[in-house]
Amino acid sequence: MTSEKLEREAIQALRRSYGEVGLPEFSKDPFELFHAWLKAAVETPVIVEANAMVLSTVDGNQPSSRTVLLKDLTDRFSFFTNYNSRKAGEMAKNPKVSLLFPWYAMERQVIVFGSAKKISAEASHEYFQSRPWGSQIGAWSSEQSADLDTREDLEIRFKEFAEKYPEGTLVPTPPHWGGFEVVPTSIEFWQGRYSRLHDRVRYTATPEGWNVKRVNP
Ligand SMILES: Cc1cc2nc3c(=O)[nH]c(=O)nc-3n(C[C@H](O)[C@H](O)[C@H](O)COP(=O)(O)O)c2cc1C
Image 1: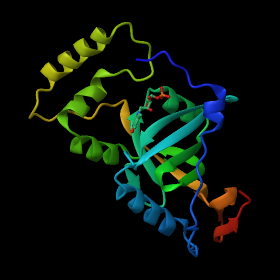
Image 2: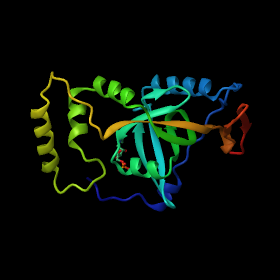
Image 3: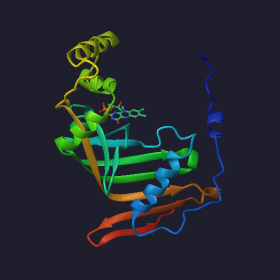
């Protein structure tokens, strides 16, 4: 590990020129465009975890963000987590969230605003049962977001659950683990363009359907 720091000038000089290719004619349905961008991200090898999204929640007036993985896409965005985690506690008090898909290698970003709610226990169970055994035992072992004295404590809990639910047997779905789905109220697409004249297109949900508008970059 080097102790060399990046000086301010070096950080300020980090600058890329964005492309000529803009947003194509956009449809009335943001999910058509979202699916096309997600598929393109999945097929772009330099993008790792194309389904990673930054979930922001709020605790009173303090926002907090973390990455989670998109695991289902209908007219909602779904992810799985620990229902005792910090994020779950915050969403229980205030379901308003934002999601950000950071597809920098494609000069793209998508930001979703919406409300999060738990999915059914059956749907969580179905997904949990499709996970690899190690991830299942990990979900039992981790008291996500709680303080942990030592790494060893976590490893011991893993071993205990691994003995309780050996590989090859059915691992029950933990009651503290499951999915959330975000019902979007707005979805904004950002495509980098030359001279910082980026394309921004925002879809807003209305009772009549999606309203679509360009926004200044
Ligand atoms: C690439 C990546 C994917 C992640 N996916 C998930 C996920 O799907 N679910 C989850 O609970 N945590 C996931 N995490 C961990 C979270 O970012 C976070 O550390 C954890 O959920 C605890 O968050 P909280 O204490 O704010 O509730 C992921 C982290 C990274 C870097």
